Picture 1 (cartoon, rainbow over the protein chains, first blue to last red):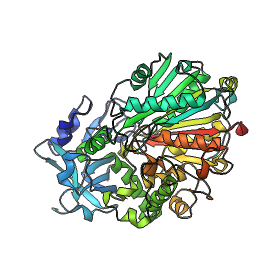
Picture 2 (cartoon, each protein chain N blue to C red):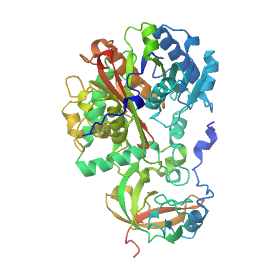
Picture 3 (tube, rainbow over the protein chains, first blue to last red):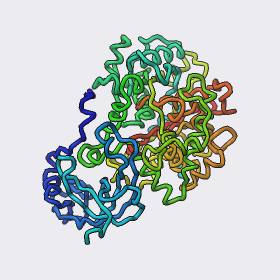
Picture 4 (cartoon, rainbow over the protein chains, first blue to last red):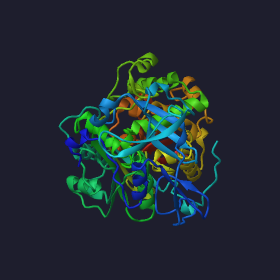
Length: 143
Length: 400
């Protein structure tokens, strides 16, 4: 059942049994990827098994935080009231230096500067008084 | 182009079942009707169209509804209609649900789980929910950990694929807009369509951004509406002396990812595999299809699907649109009712309207919208940022 009062609250990630370590890492400013020693696969997001070979022996390693924009879309009409005050904002589909892709948001500059293949870097900061989220800004701004 | 391999006839559903009845409710703004009431209205029309009573239905397959959020919509619907089927399920693979219902109905009938299946879907997204909640209801289908916290509407997943298509193949905003214009032209000939005013490419380009590269008029509608179909065995269709049964010739599905960031390629989708399976089962290829229903949640979606369904080469969808190939006189008339962009889009049932139109095209009952000589039709349903893809191929008796 959809509760109208919930439409105004920004959704916060709720870690599950697979993702506790990941979200703990984000709060400490680290984007943890899973590396599979058995087959060499690197994966995002965190889960109990390697998506390539099924191994349960996965190692968490912090990503470099360097990425490039694979695709993006600047949102002008928010998905509900919770995001209305943020528009326009750029949702990014970034490709991490280590290979995996992830969805994120662009911060630190006007969304109109975002382009394909643009170099971006990780920023982990609390959002609207909630938990930290892994977001990205243009690379090299504070080199 | 997809290569066609024949599938062992013992495992094929080709021609074993047929659609013998089809009905739709009023669509668009239909206030004061619950999703169940809309679905019951469509079901009544489908039963009347088939000339059978509700107690001759022993199976019910449905999509779910945001406005009537029963966990088991198909079961709630059966109670509402006053029947007690011995086969039922509520399917949920987002926008692809429509075609999966036909594929599964055909398999259930061929496998003996049911003899006559009512396929039904209805929702009232326009008047049953506030616009913000309707949008929210769609965004809640995205993952709460890795997608939703970034404010990603479902439109945004499709927008990122379209954006990438522009970068890789030079597809233009004008080509996207032309998709909307063609759909509007089609809807203007369709009685009861939600949007029937004239529309130009400039109107689309000036309609304001929703999520780049999509403008408001690149996006499909939010509607109320329901559709229902009666599917039965070919033998039963014959025994009932159905004038023009429309046979299910092939079906295929493909699920490539859940999260948009794990989509293998943003510009080539699981529609390649789902349609290849459907073509192989039906024993035909894209060039043989006379009329199509192609899921059109956004304008760019149509361009990508024309490529992945094999109607034009990869990367040439934009030019295919410019050349008028998806309307009358073109290579493959698509969505002659106006589609989700201009006829109606009541959520998961939306693609059932494509089925309703293609069935009527194959029956030759589309009046001024009729595609001359339509014998073989394809419907492709998809959803969730191309996570889900399902294709169904339909044909007249002449195609058996």
